[in-house]
Image (cartoon, rainbow, N blue to C red; front, side, top):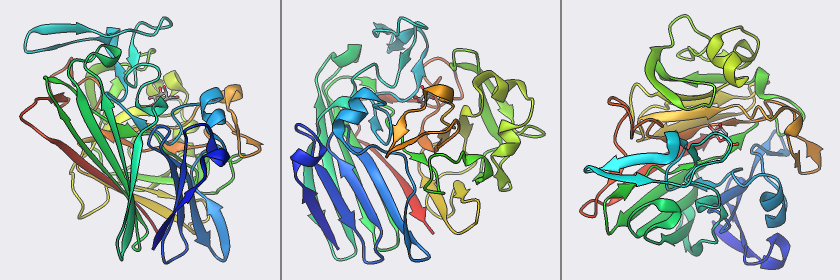
Length: 346
Ligand code: GAL
């Protein structure tokens, strides 16, 4: 297995594209701009299918959407009013002027940084090790945080993401990856006919700002019950207050179990010729269905349709700094942050 480094010229100033290919002919392209996945190209019945949303140049990420495929940090999702406390010390983050909250660690966070990158090649997997040092006080967060995100492609058709971090002061840390899957490889087709399985009995209710309200609700008798694989259209086409509010899914699902024995989520392509299994040690997954409506960007030459992708953002559920029962995202200097998520392509 090999990692090929593609010249900066092709991708953009300071941004390098790394191309990883496994022995089954599966190719994953990643860039140091935002420690991001750009392409995931899978051979299906003799054809090559790109199953994630991404752009051809660094410039397009800057002008269209910085979150596509990126590492998100320091804190994924919304922090209500941008405020939190650690050990009775109150912190205020800069907030968005539109709604007064802080999304994905604030603008130009991890997704916009040029990360250092190192390549590691082994017999059964190839990896790119991204590192970024977030200075003390960056975007209002305390502590100097040294973050590493390792992307590996294995011969078992797994894309493994390993997150590691350490801080020199108590801080918050809750990273994720913002990849959008569309297993048809066609961005003009919505994910409505994809099937989704999620091993979650409960989801977090959101309000009209898409911040969590503190209520964890049973999925029983709601269109959010994916404990048996179901089509996404049953979400898009039902009148249920929670999905009508955000035009689809933009919700944290609380996973019934974590670990790597069984998948916590599975996306299946409409023709059932491809599926992606997700395994994680994180307690929740935020699923966002790309409801960009008319604002959908052009993706590799085609306009992205509404609901043209689906994210599986593994993390501790947003709301952890406000509500009991949502988990804990405080990182102390004594602890090394470590977590893993695997997407396995079948
Ligand atoms: C998601 C978030 C959405 C939207 C999106 C970025 O993670 O939940 O509400 O902001 O990121 O376009």
